[in-house]
Length: 200
Image (tube, rainbow, N blue to C red; front, side, top):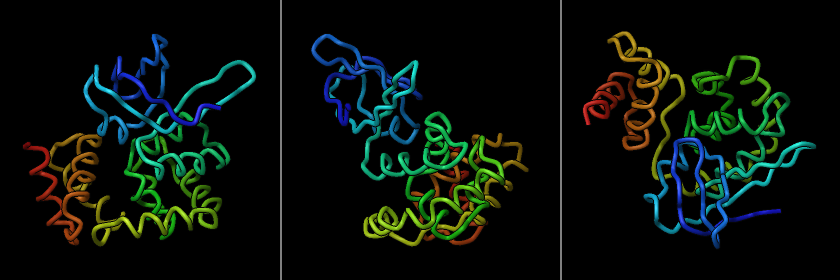
């Protein structure tokens, strides 16, 4: 079982990387959250990994933080959520926001993630709420402010879309704005902050 990898970042793409370790390149699938924290190609890198086995294949999934890895391992225990969808979920929202949505039974926040419908979101809530306490406690201890609710984010994203911004761009801008402005409690304030993100 491969638990961590440490080497040179030989290739960097949004959904996968190759880490060169003693002239062997290890392909590792990643979320966009981990991608955003990686160094440039040619630099040293260290990632936590989940080594996934099937009868015909084995794959490595990489994570920048322990919190993200633990959440991934919980997500893939949900019926109908495999490793590919698990990474999609982690790419859709920061790990802390996903944990908060599960703890607060915020199905609206979960269904904002591409590929997650109401049924999958409901299964996540039903199957994970009793399992996520430990990760949630850690997230609460490391949080630097009051999190913005999923409903507020959803309404802000919808407002941006009404201005002609694509759904993906709107959601990304809202998430970036909410991470940097955790006191943006109103939809109007969050929309303004998200527009600033889009103009960067």
